[in-house]
Image 1 (cartoon, helix red, strand yellow):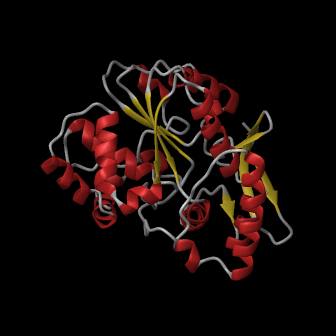
Image 2: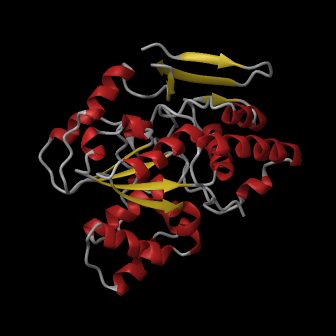
Length: 298
């Protein structure tokens, strides 16, 4: 499928695939229509779990947390199985109680997930930190969906033009929030990245209860320490952090995640003018979205 490129007046370039008026990451496998159809019809089992988030919102972190909880292990798993990038034929193989992840907007997730046949963990992070993390991440990759300055990425972000997995941040969040309110079948636990950072242990308990697991506090405290950003960063540098799938994205096949993992890092990147622009557009779009968002930016 053709990869399109878009360049602004300052030489900032976006690369993407396009389908039905939506932009998708250029590294999504094959024809977008076929891939989305295959994802929609996936036959997940009822003991599977799906982690859903916009990119750079804590997906790797929570995926590993859930993996450790379900396997009762402190061993790092590595990069998650992402529906839009990995080999879907692996899901048809016999297995039980698997954990998957996706950055797709709600519109494109598997039908069985929409029907409540799968437990979903949905993560939301404030968009200013998402944007900063996305810029640092993209700057380290060989195969990029964006190549340019931070200011250019900011403008694309506010214009709903970032080609991630079928939706801009604003559309992604709106579709998920509306689905939670209007689809009574959804089995979904909503988490805020900032809440996780401020009180990880209570959120580990919350996830444990949602997944109907039985662990004592001793194990959960050990898990809390294991999931510190410093420890995850070290573990990611081992062989477990390598995925051959990403060897064309970055030289060693190890995605550049676990950078700072803090709240409010945007204050070290945004200029005053950029922040004022972001706040003005965010306020306008938030009002138009007609959903309640109580995000922590500090």
